[in-house]
Length: 397
Image (cartoon, rainbow, N blue to C red; front, side):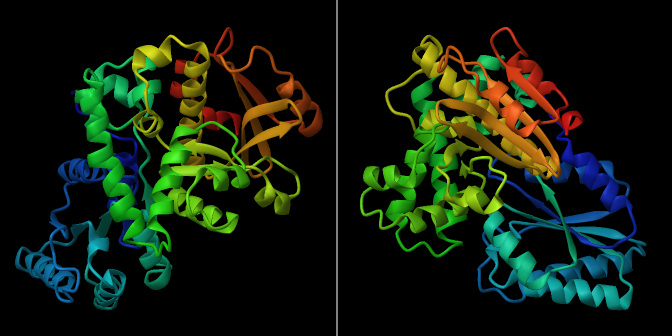
């Protein structure tokens, strides 16, 4: 594996070289390199630093954060450092962490102590809760996304087909030549902790078994429209549609699975539309679809079309987060547009040419109805998938 420097490292370096203003919070899905990125940044800085990990600390330890903070203050004064960087990884694993951080940060602000703080966490839900409740106005978020095609290609030499099928989790890359082993790794090392720790332990879920079922169903149907009524029929003890809506929102906050709404001009109507299920990483689609293999999917044009469309959806979800856009699909009768990206008043329509549909006039109809700034056709004889994944989509918005 070649060492990769993720793009967020430049942003973090720039922020830490600025005068002390806000706490820097690095958040993102599991196993996307948050800790590695921060350690790379610390090596490049000329500012002294200390790195602590709260993993393994007793959750009810009320003094651990304060003790680490005091260590850094003492080190700073002993060495007469004008500034120092304090990093705490997995900070959300300590109960009431945000109140403790707020107390120490505010004390430094009052006493003009120049400690710059970076917080990391694998649970976006717990971080978000603590930040909004206690640290409002005191932090900036730096979001880490799943690994891109270009990063997986540079690190592991993957071609576009491997990326479409196996997704963008770098930790799983060494196992792709043995799909049984790869699936076992995905399910035990990524999927199980993401659900059990990042979702079920951080949010009150009345029906944990239903959450598991919904996640497995949604991953297997990634790229497909599936009504809540249809989901209710496929799930055991599903309750009502409102429960599924809420659970899907939680999975979306955790960067696992979401339901894309239909693009409509009336914002109030989008919440009543049929969702288009979409994973955040195609590895989840592959790992949780039974009875398949790379060869089987790749040689079946309809199946491969599903994987390609889902991979484009993963890419656009990451871009939507990075560029602060909204992502939709559009469909009227038998005409549809696979993805619609909206940023303020600018709209980009994207059609994926795949084995699912031989022809579709949806893009033409959508242009007539909504007059988007740009439209793209990806795949087939149009824009190659590789070019989309490596291109600058922000230039179209």
